[in-house]
Amino acid sequence: MSADKKKKSVKIICENLRRIRVISVPIFRPYRRDAAKEAPMKSDIPQLMHERGLDALVVYGNTDTSSDLAYLAAGAHLERAMVLHVRGQEPVLFASVLERENAEATGLATRLWSDYPLSRYLQETDGDLAAARIAQWRDIFADYGVQGRVGFYGLMDMGFAYRFLTDLAAALPEIEVVGENPPNLFNAARETKDAREIEIMRAVGQATTAVIANVFDFLSGHRAQGDALIQADGSPLTIGDVKAFIRMELAKRNLEEPHPTIFSQGRDAGVPHNAGRPDMPLRLGQTIIFDIFPRDRATGYFHDITRTFFLGHAPDALVEKWLDVKRVFDEVMAAIRVGEPGGKFQQMTCDLFEVMNYPTICVDPQTTVGYIHSLGHGVGLDIHEGPRLSTIGPQTILRPGHVVSVEPGLYFPDDGWGVRIEDTIAFDENGEIINLSDFPYEMVIPVRA
Image (cartoon, rainbow, N blue to C red; front, side, top):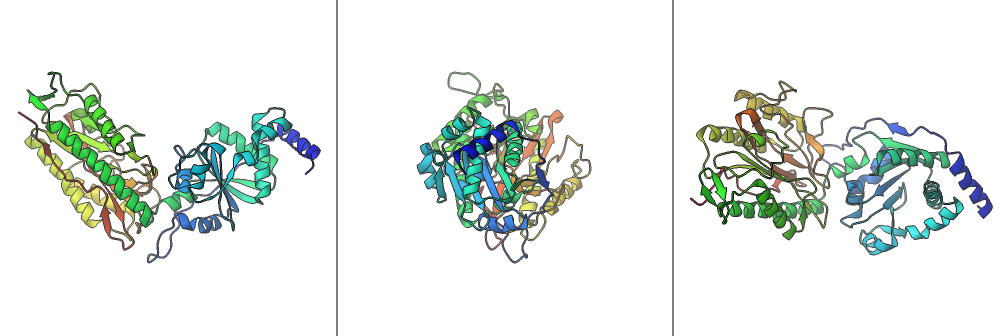
C-alpha cells in the first residue's frame, strides 16, 4: 500500500469509525474427551480454537492483571504485551523493547512493538492515539494474514475494550470480532494442569504452610493475660500485628498477597470473607479462621488453605462445632475422585450437615447461617477458577490435572463463631489425590500462661 493510500485509509479510520456489532458466541460446555483421556490443557489450544470456530486469537494486557496472558507467558512479567495466534501457525508475542529479554524467556517467537513504531502511526493520524493503535494493529494483522473469526482475551478497561474492538472491526472488515461467554477457551485450557504446573503448585503449597507454621509459633510465643494475648510491652496483640507478621513471612518466601489474608475472630469468623479487624485484640477461646491464599511472585500460581483454631483453650460447645466440620471435611476428602461431577460433592456436604441439623444452601439458597457456600473451586493463576465444586450451573467432571480447594464450613455470626477447614488438592495423571496443603489440623494453639 502506498503512503498516500495508507494515509487516506487512516483518515477514514479517524473520521468514519462506525458502530459495529461485536459477536458473542454461545456458552460452550467445557471441552471433554473420553473419560479415559486427559482434559484439555495448554497444548490443546489449537484444538480448542478449531472447536470454537476461531481463525485467530489475541491476548492483550499485563501479566499481573491478565491471568490468560500470564498463562501463555510461563512466568515472565510483561506490560502491554500481546500474543497473536493464527490457527496453523506458531503463536507470536509482541512486547516492549524494555522487556525483550523477559519476552524471549517465554519461549514464544517474539516481535517488538518497535517493529511497528507507534510514532510513525501517530504522524499518519495527526496525533490521534486511538486511531494510531488501530493502524498499528491493522498492519500486524495484515503481515500475519489474520482473517475471519478472531477471539479477543486479556484484561483492559471495559469501556475502552468495547470502543477499541468496535473501531478495530470497523477498520478491518475482513475480521469478525468474537467475544466468548464463559467458560471461554482459556477457562477450558487452564482448568487442567500438567505435571509441571502441579509441581509448581506443590512448591507454593509448601511455602504457604511454612508461613502458617511460623505464625502459630509466633502466637504461641506470646503470653496470656486474662482472656487476651499481650506483647512484651504489655499492649494487646492485635489481628493487625499478626497480619504484619504474616506479610513479612510471605515476603521471605517470595509470596505476595494480591487479596487480603483472612484472619478473623469470633463473630467476624461467622462471615466467610470477613478479613478480620486490624485493631481487634486476640482473645482466648474464640474461633479464629486463618484463610491464606498467596501468589508466588515468580510463577504467578496461587495456593489456598484454611485452618480454624482456638488460642489457649476451646469451649466444649465450640469443640463440637469444630469436630462437625472436620468430620464432613474428612468424609468428603475420602470420597472425592475423578470421573464424578464436582456438584456431587457439594450435595454430599449439604447432606452431611443437614443430618447434623445445620441449615445449608442446598435447602435454602438464601440462608446466611450454617453452610452457605459451595464446597470449593479451581486454583491456579487465579485464586478462583474452574472447575467448581457446586451444584449451580453446568457440571464439570473431575479429571486428572484438576486442582481444587475443598472447604466445608459453618457460620453463625450472631452466636459469635465460624469454622472452616480447607485444603487444596490435585489429581495426578493416574487420578490419585495429591494434597498440596500438607499441614496438621490443630484445634488449639497453646500459649504461655
